Length: 85
Image (cartoon, rainbow, N blue to C red):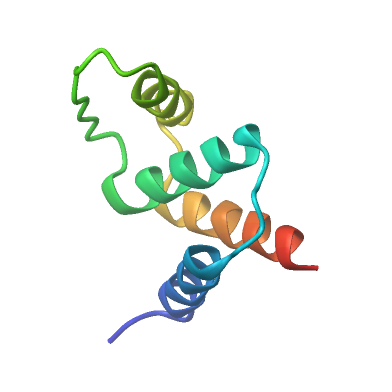
């Protein structure tokens, strides 16, 4: 059975996925990093195809190293909620 946090996280992800407004790059990076940390934790994977955008995304995720996955979910939800207000 899914926890209340997991349900809220999935709902926040749905909302973020459907956003039509263009978000600032730093907000997009934070969304990406919190999502990856929430879903994968510290199990980092990097597709090194010399893409600068991917390098920024990976760096943003690496900065969350050690963050608890539930904490990352909470931060992701908080960030999405701040965007849609």
